[in-house]
Image (cartoon, rainbow, N blue to C red):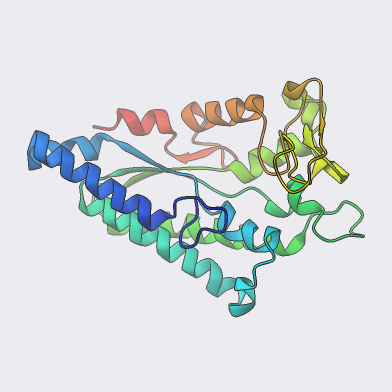
Length: 253
């Protein structure tokens, strides 16, 4: 999803908040205000957001980043997230789970944007993701102090995915940088399935041996490993999840 604009034709965050309000209203109609609010307070609200905000301007040749410096642009994204968190909190939401951003400049589809980079990561996208992750961590820490009963889980996707990219064999993979499906260098051209402007694509024989499925997305095996860490990972490990894992969030009354 994206927080404010929809270059990839996905539902933006503010629209999803309106849908959330509709569900909340339905609960209040069916259950009454008190029980509806209690139901919302027991729920865990999962946010996986930001990738499209920072990747799509480069992938679609948008000029939106020309209008802002990096800090201002990241501030806009974080501001939109903050608005939605506060909106859910006012309706009774108390438990939130977040995923930070991977090193966007190092995913196959971003590595190939600038020719002649000798396979190095696309630093402009990487810097935006890094700024976002720092701002998100700071925001959640501050909200925990400001909002009574606010509890959160923040999964360090960035570090966990980087470990699998740099040391794939340690996690049961063979290839950590090249995608299973696509074309071009790193199979970074989003052509998987042949239904996009570029029709030609190659497909690996054993997807479970790859960290990346296509130019932007991970394989099922990678997602399963990361999901397991989000759910029950050690909260004492700064490279995992904290201050709660999602399993712990669900157990909080």
